[in-house]
Length: 220
Ligand code: ATP
Image 1 (cartoon, rainbow, N blue to C red):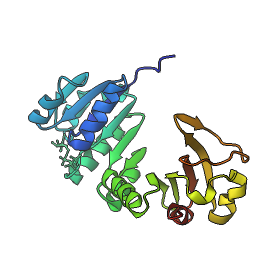
Image 2: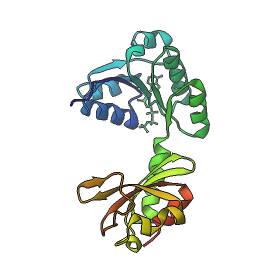
Image 3: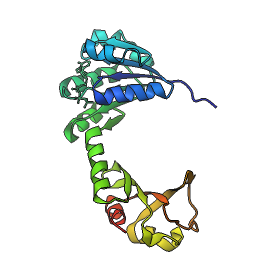
């Protein structure tokens, strides 16, 4: 079954915006990439469905793009916070159904939420956290903060747990975390049964409080 083709617009073609636009295109969707800088627009022009050079803080230019009919708009303008906020506000006013906006910091993120961004992303902060967590423990393969005290982590099964079932590992009681999936070779066991025995080289995908996960991450 093929997934329905969607229409996305990405505003601001820095490294982040370009990566979002190209990935959506590669996933088979229609992408309109927009930037005020002609050179940036040209660079991506043969890799996405449509490109437009426009200053999105200008209401008339923005109106002409017909963004209201898109499934989602990504505001990826970076350095210029004022342009980022103004664009998000104008896009929201146009009635776009789903807006994702990139924030530079917490205060900027709060502003974007107040304006009505449906999702605010912090790519630099998130990637920094992921790199830091993977450095602290060689067990950590990936780390995603879902909210200030809830995270999802992908860890190589600590030796301590190998040969034990999930129930016997007692992870839920000791660390307050839940194993939501186990990657074993190429297979994904989801959700694992409490009786599932953890094997060497299993990768555990665990959700839980940031504190609990930190204790789990450093187990040998
Ligand atoms: P990254 O880290 O993703 O490379 P960045 O934080 O360095 O991005 P910028 O390069 O500052 O982000 O901004 C991304 C793009 O947004 C730039 O190509 C810039 O031309 C574009 N941009 C800035 N202001 C506007 C605007 N008013 N309208 C349209 N595009 C804009």
